[in-house]
Length: 79
Image 1 (cartoon, rainbow, N blue to C red):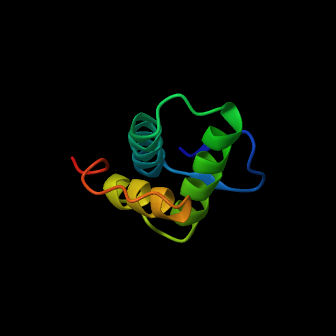
Image 2 (cartoon, rainbow, N blue to C red):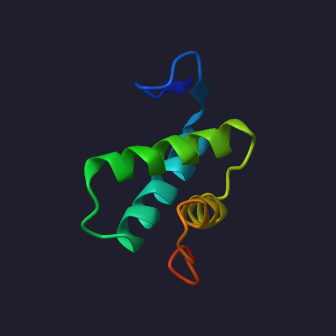
């Protein structure tokens, strides 16, 4: 069974990838509290792009996403 992400067309991820993306998103959002919804959307899209490329490590997805936004995630994404 695959799970589709609503705002990404023609892209489907299995349950493991979906869990990894969810964990990465939660970690990234916790690292940047109080952000407007547009920032959360950018975070989600970046994580999806990375996962589409085969990355399935939640910590790495979080780390790269925060670095893309200009933040130094240090240990914020670590387990």
